[in-house]
Length: 411
Image 1 (cartoon, rainbow, N blue to C red):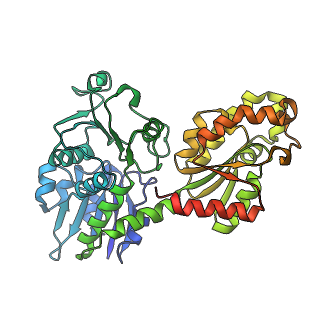
Image 2 (image 1 turned 180 degrees about the vertical axis):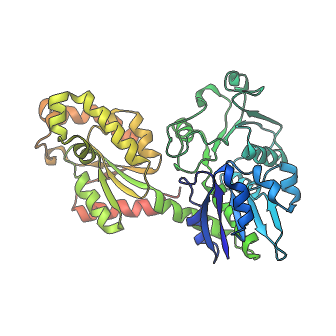
């Protein structure tokens, strides 16, 4: 049985990983240009396919039958070939989004909903929140009646939902709005799932606003799709199991802390224990410039070095399943917080100052360890999800981090 995902650009997708856990079928990635859609459907190389952007409306014309829900919404995200060879189109994103709302305890009944985007996914979300009792729904597009020039007129929105790809990997730093402009907002949903925490969700998190990514919707709709593929029910418990498994595989472990606190050694031990790759931002910079951190700071100045560091952390932070050891001053640039948090859990490695290694560390030598620590401590605490004392052997500290990671990364 051949199934898969049809879209134009699929580098961001986790669908293949998910479906490998849901059904005994060959799940392939069909990256097809718009001009090649006719040929793709003429070849009919599939038994069932998911549909992603930009084809959720375009492929409806190839279907012999549509579900009532698909007809009502006007878009589909799954096509199944029946026993007679006919193509049946349905919309499982609808059920996936309802699952997302329930799993994250987001209530839309009697709320004003602001939907960013006016495409096929926005149509699905609009139908879902309408059926859940939303009192008012406003869809914002770049050139429609409600657009990003007059969006401040919607500052009374209570639930904000992004259905656009703005902020999706590899352009993770993008966002369409400033959450601060919406004082009535009670929850923010971003259907982007790569990165795990988009810039929009990061801002909501920093403001203490309940928020949810599209990962649970992705897995829930995949479960519903798999049921259509195989013609058998799948227990709902599989959804959370797969979400947790994905988070464990995808999420980075990020180590921050003072120079000489043991980040590199702890990171190396974590990499060994977990079978992961470790990247060190200072090493990344040295490889790209041919100079050590000390040489760059002494010869070009700290600010020049921090710019290189920001680029290195932005690159590493977008990747998945890494151990990332950062330089001691990485926390001095707020932009690095998002870069490290978008796919990572951040650990502040604390160590007795008298035990810190200050060799070949020009800032530690010029400013002094104590003063440097007092300057940076508030930033370490701001960035960190967890503080870990490096007060014992490296193996013990690494095991503490690994235990916390597996217990809490799904939260």
